[in-house]
Figure 1 (cartoon, rainbow over the protein chains, first blue to last red):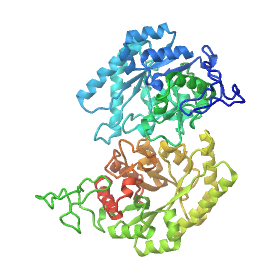
Figure 2 (cartoon, rainbow over the protein chains, first blue to last red; figure 1 turned 45 degrees about the vertical axis):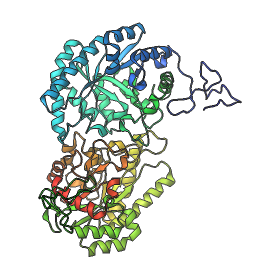
Figure 3 (cartoon, rainbow over the protein chains, first blue to last red; figure 1 turned 180 degrees about the vertical axis):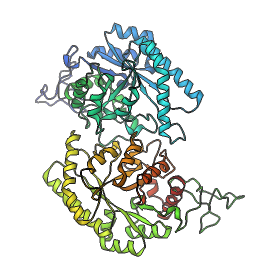
Figure 4 (cartoon, rainbow over the protein chains, first blue to last red; figure 1 turned 135 degrees about the vertical axis):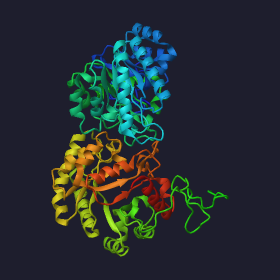
Amino acid sequence: MHPTHPMHPTHPMHPTHPMHPTRPMHDAPSGRPASIATPSPGDPRIADLSLNQWTTRHWTMPEAIEGCARAGIPAIGVWREPLQAHGVAATAKHVRDAGLRVSSLCRGGFFTAQEAAQRADAMADNRRAIDEAAALGAPCLVLVVGGLPPESRDLVAARRRVSAALAELVPYAAAAGVRLALEPLHPMYCADRAVLSTLAQALDMAESFPAAHVGVVIDAFHVWWDPELAAHVARAGARIASFQVCDWLVPVPSDLLLARGMMGDGVIDLRALRAAVMAAGYRGDTEVEIFNAALWATPGDDVVATVARRYVEHVV
Amino acid sequence: MHPTHPMHPTHPMHPTHPMHPTRPMHDAPSGRPASIATPSPGDPRIADLSLNQWTTRHWTMPEAIEGCARAGIPAIGVWREPLQAHGVAATAKHVRDAGLRVSSLCRGGFFTAQEAAQRADAMADNRRAIDEAAALGAPCLVLVVGGLPPESRDLVAARRRVSAALAELVPYAAAAGVRLALEPLHPMYCADRAVLSTLAQALDMAESFPAAHVGVVIDAFHVWWDPELAAHVARAGARIASFQVCDWLVPVPSDLLLARGMMGDGVIDLRALRAAVMAAGYRGDTEVEIFNAALWATPGDDVVATVARRYVEHVV
């Protein structure tokens, strides 16, 4: 598929595969030749890189943990579905034994239901998520707050229900030592995923609570377009509980839920955004979170190698 | 396809076609039975309704003018492509003879090119658009400001070029008596269509110039999600040069450029938004602008009839 150039089998612009020195490395999912060598475990440039495990969605929990360890990626963003499949205690032990950190647990939220029974179910599920985050030692539980309920056009009321649910959940989370992290989602998801659409709005909501208990997620994909981004990243300061990166592709892929690109394949100035997040005082991991069908069809080790290279090239 | 109910051929919930009393009316593009009778020409509820002609894209300029006149829609939002195809003077006369108003001319802008030659081309084209708006007597020229140029990740610089181009164009527009109308586009178009993404940002830019020369467009599709919308609609006041409606569909159709829905088929509270726009002092027409392939495949008269019904049901 990608034959090595016969004259330059180890051309520095086309690093070769470490196991197959005559085979050049290619980035996933673009298939473009890698332009740098894959960082080795221990490379200081990836010292705060985290793999959000939905980026390698078809890996099981143990596969993701071992894949990170093999590649020298020191942290992992955990999703609840694979966590529950492997078991919370088993995962916590496996992560610890592999020498990894957990950077976040994804995800709670979905607070906008109108009916009492649905609302009670959501609150119960959020309490379970908080328990899981505590058991894992995750620094935060990411909250996707939910969109408009069926048949509703009332955004203001939906946002009010989010605030009310958050207020109800904070004492439980605080008692468990878990920080809740409000994630503003791109406005194109306002109707069906999250009525929280900007960093400013997330901060307005978070600031009713102590920063130790409620923070915000800054995900480049969701906020990069915001004309007020710089001001609100600075304002966010110690509220930044999680920082996530991927890229915005042009044109936007047709499935909006799988529209995320590998860093460097799109138009977001990720390096500038990370610098702003660090300048605001954030010292946690930078999670790579990419929902992309072509990437999911790529072997996990190749995904992780590309993630590490592109992180060095486009983020830090 | 939609047989009349044999027992209730003229059931009030299923108005029948005026030309075919046994055939019920159906809304485009949903195919759902119409729930009200189509407003007749002269109906005061459609006194400020305007058909943006891209809603009936396959109609020529004369067809669109005559279609509006036939349906009693008193105003039309004109696009430059059909305008140029029919001729500016011929269109102006045809609109006048049909007793219609022009509510806007779409569209100028595309100010973000980096290269001098491309930039000069864009400015020349905008001056032509201003001349056309003046010849038509359009109350404003809608500006879609442009996205990131190829290979660029610098939103701040792109926005700066928009401001510079606008400053250069305002004297020409003012001399021609044409008001420029900055349109913030939904953030999902930030990369490739418009680096102007919120009403607040458009107002910040417009407010460097007199309100008579630079206003803003409020298009429900682009701004409905904004948590600060109410405050900025009120702030916009006399800056509102154009108000456009359609609906936000769930799930979002796969082609983002054709993702707009008929009013009532989606989740936007259009009536509340229109009330806010009117409360801010706007007294112009309300334009229906729907880019939707299924609608474009529907005969124009059926589209226009649905537009009038849904406008009454969901907007005024």
